[in-house]
Image (tube, rainbow, N blue to C red; front, side, top):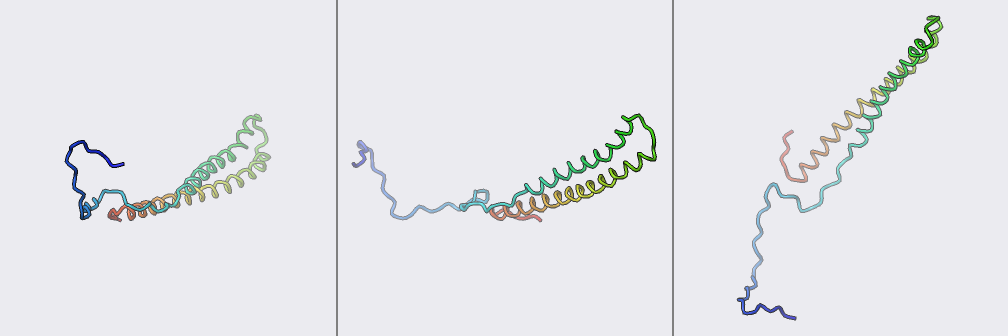
Length: 128
């Protein structure tokens, strides 16, 4: 059914296409953003490293706390008992610090890569 305009003048249909406005530099791109790399593995490594360092501190404190709660006693026997805890705490601490450092480096590199991809997709200039 035809549209009625009730005596109003009818708008002429343009024969030529309307001129396109140039895209402003702040406009969103017309194509989808590329998939950005995830920072989750780096953050998980940071959390695991921090928890591991706390665990190493706890492991090294266990024999001392047990010695004090036991009322002291033979220090030579305590040193033999505590040496196993110290070795375990050092191993856990070194592995945890390695995970913490790796997580920090991985997170920073991924964030820089995400920023570079986002800037390229949006057409923004790269400053560094």
